[in-house]
Image 1 (cartoon, rainbow, N blue to C red):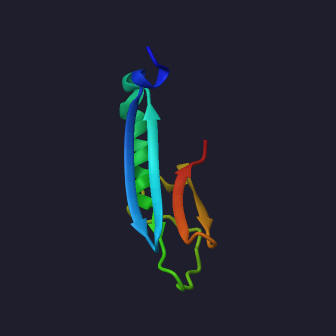
Image 2: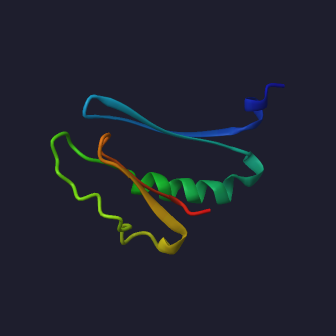
Length: 88
């Protein structure tokens, strides 16, 4: 049996500003409940900014994030993206 046949895949895909963005999670089905909660928080925080937008890329988390002390913010002004990710 192939290793990937034992894993669960969750994928979000969008096209913005002429670019394809994919957020993919491969997880062990027996541990997917906890992993999926973290992944869903990451997905919901993912921001893509329009071309030519001047955004301050502030290091603040969305108000919807309940335990922001557990997450950091990755921001890349070259690609115009921002996403929250787990600190550990």
